[in-house]
Length: 131
Image 1 (cartoon, rainbow, N blue to C red):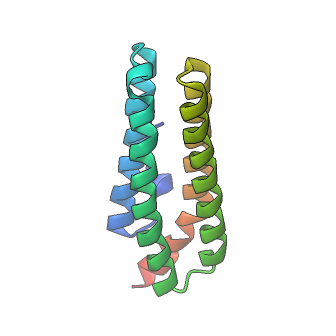
Image 2: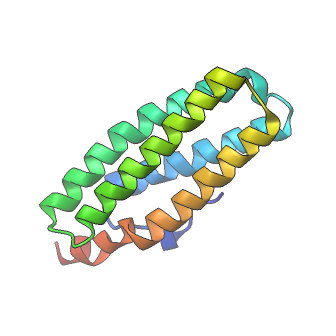
């Protein structure tokens, strides 16, 4: 999944972090396509969990400081994604690697990024532009 300006929040730090998340997804999609998913799926999930935990905290703080009306919805969405990610990790630990499960995980991540960043995070843009 490619980053576009449609995902811009107007907060340089958040936009850079979102670009990194999109790149992580794109890189792991390539890994699956190359047949190397089994070796790196667990590492990908762990890296994603750690990255989003840090990112979510920064983003929530930013929304709070800007008095963004999406603040509460953002926190709920982050909690839901964190639970979904924990479930993916638990299934991987229990069942091992499956290309089908990894592809499903990537679809979930990409869809979540697309929907969340465009509908919730982008609500920061007018606030950032106001200063």
